[in-house]
Length: 130
Image 1 (cartoon, helix red, strand yellow):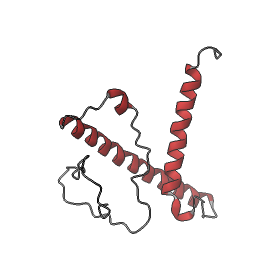
Image 2 (cartoon, one colour):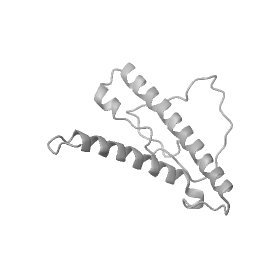
Image 3 (cartoon, helix red, strand yellow):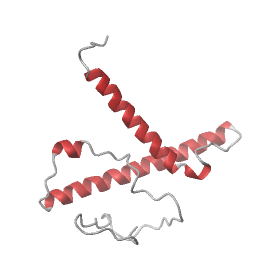
Image 4 (cartoon, rainbow, N blue to C red):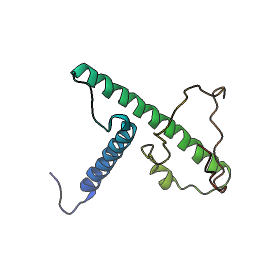
């Protein structure tokens, strides 16, 4: 039973709903090629499409999490104040950094297990930089 004077339950439900909506928004952005519609006429084909979407979504979340962690680590190493409360609110479900239009190459650069260099947080953004 929910206590009407205690809004912690409502806040927990709202936080979960926001998380779920963020995941769905990211999935819709990644599924742009078919305008968010399953085009296969048979169930197995739809399951294949859904499985591929889940795989790509998980890969994007892992990639974003890895680089968010690297960015926070670098900022702290450079002496920028990063509050634990702020770091705890970072979400790998953001999508503004994703470019889903265009052509893609999947040849990994030879970084020998290292991450690509991060941008300087005080440098202006270069329009040509991916």
